[in-house]
Image (cartoon, rainbow, N blue to C red; front, top):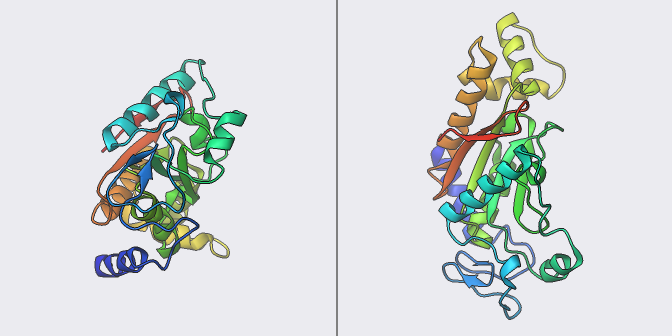
Length: 230
């Protein structure tokens, strides 16, 4: 499996999955060179309030600060005005990729109190992986120089719960829902919350051989808080 993923990464670096700007190397983040980058249009320095974090540590700190605002009811809804729209209209410099569940109660832009152009968000049921999802996640670091990938699990995940029950009862779910069951079979435990955490850690472990900075976290539906797991 790892050889297959590494092979896919070479394809991405080689330029098969390129969208818009002609980039080589890691890309640009907030007007600051991050690795070797060749922007399609000349970069302009962003106003202070529009600049993005340029390291994994700063990116996580920014996300954590935004989540604290959301959790206590003091969200600022940054980067959601015409000036931000104009700034990102011709290029994008997101500072994190968030791989999360499709659950309607866990929208990453709201949970982390961010706005337009801040995140690349990839959402699947229980943040399960397949080759297309991997390509979407890898696109940020490989083509845009995004410094951080966050795998975000969450409390009471419906997809994990359905898969756990199917495994426990030895039933087959209809259609392609069974694919979710098979993807989660390796982390099965009767304790749903423990299974959610185990699956998040497992997803991080699968991504880390390919990507430099991957964080695993868990969202609490009751409090609105995000806790870092790994």
